[in-house]
Length: 213
Image (tube, rainbow, N blue to C red; front, side):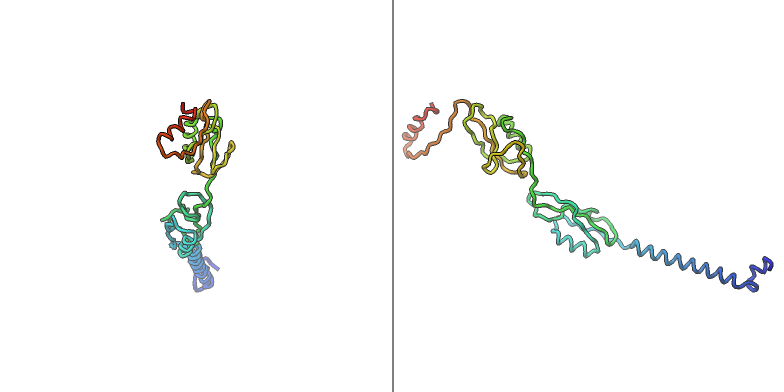
């Protein structure tokens, strides 16, 4: 068979039928492949991540599932005044375009107040310095309690809810502390229940106490 006869449709029609069949097969295979890839990657089927801030976990779950999105809680943080289990942040952020089925990672509010170590002020600082250090650490201060001690305005203790704290104690952030400080050498506490209704009688009672002299 000559070359001309080999490529002649009349003399070798099966060869050309095979070529045409192969081309058709390749075209069909390419079309099917592209369609599968388009379906697999959900090309053109993206959704927008909603703004979830402040939503309860149940509300956020319903909103995300309605859009075909999944979610998981990855972190929590305490925010004073905010109820627990509220969405604080989501990743990807609100407004982002993602594919259906994407998992959204949530950070929610916690009801656990973080504990903070009380600064080392016991028998280690003056009243003014202790007040500054406690406020800087985020604590509130109650009325200072004075006790008989030779060192005036020297911190000898710290109380939380009426309990004396030890060094390196940790208590809830923002708690109210009471500083216990010395009154100074020679100072004594004075307690008197004034029952006199006359000003002169009251003055006489005060005068009888030597520490006012």
